[in-house]
Length: 43
Image (cartoon, rainbow, N blue to C red; front, top):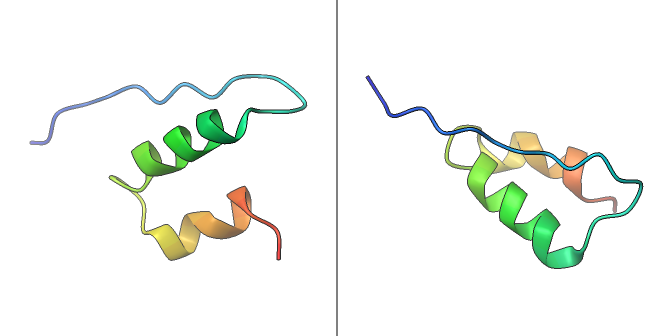
């Protein structure tokens, strides 16, 4: 089985762009990017 890795999501009303990008990059290791994008970015 794969290695488990915790994903920490800060509980803030605003996140630094770099923090958001790092969370997104980490999450895409487990979830398809197209499924995540609507939760991270608005169009």
